[in-house]
Image (cartoon, rainbow, N blue to C red; front, side, top):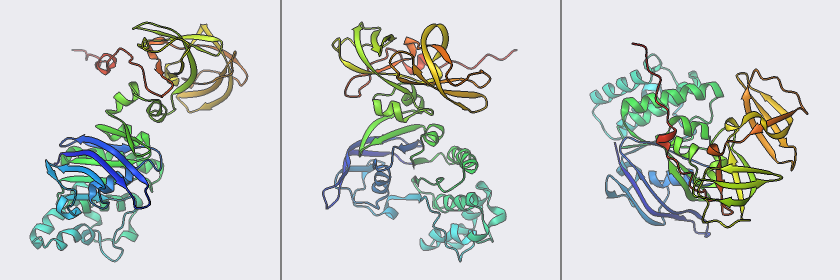
Length: 375
């Protein structure tokens, strides 16, 4: 296992492009950390800097307390799995997994044992004599992972390793990666543009935007307490509704905002803002309730997903778009009017710079304990 520290890390190319900007981050022993963000945000560049494949322009990177800025990938003790499997086509599975150990001149007896152990864990034992061309995509990916694991690296780096797989295989591989992490108790950094992968795999998520770290936290922290408008819109599927609003009044416990011709409450502390300030009101589709005493919306589209449906609606007065998640058994027609309620305790509020106001609750207050078993 390994502990990684990034202190004021920057990456500036010769043409002046500033890709990574003053990154500060701690990754603890055994954590599964996911870098996530849109294309071009710098997540792969950050990973390559950790690996030693990209030079650090300024700042310090420490691995277990030791500065590693000028160390090679081999000296850092890092195992990396790329988006492309990069397997040697003329070698068998066994030879591919063992290749790095042979280069390191590990004794043949030890190589045989370590390859056998890794193959057993990855369910590759029956495939050791086959070549990559005889394997499925998921099997090839497991061979690539095995080639990294067998070296017993301090730190595993995975750069979008599942993006070449079909949807159902990605789901299975996500579950397997989580299992491997439990068995190895290793420190992992995983890069993806898929926020569903980030939510399901991570102990800690690092959201990047334009080369800067936007927010760091657990999946639930980012979901329920986004600190910025960008994180609120990026984390969650379907996305949070983000409605232009104007502040009308505020106390320490609640803000009243106007969205079109409607007034809504949000249980946040917006007392530092001035009345009339432009805001953004956030509400997740699953938090919106159908309520005859609520405000009117017109159904413009319906996406039926089986157990649930997504309703694409617009407010009757003002026309703002609102996405509503409802049970799949609810009968809804295009053009139909529904009445919805937006609970104040579920709302998020952001200022005109995209910074979230304090919701006044903690994640611990939102977590519900498991149901008690009958004795």
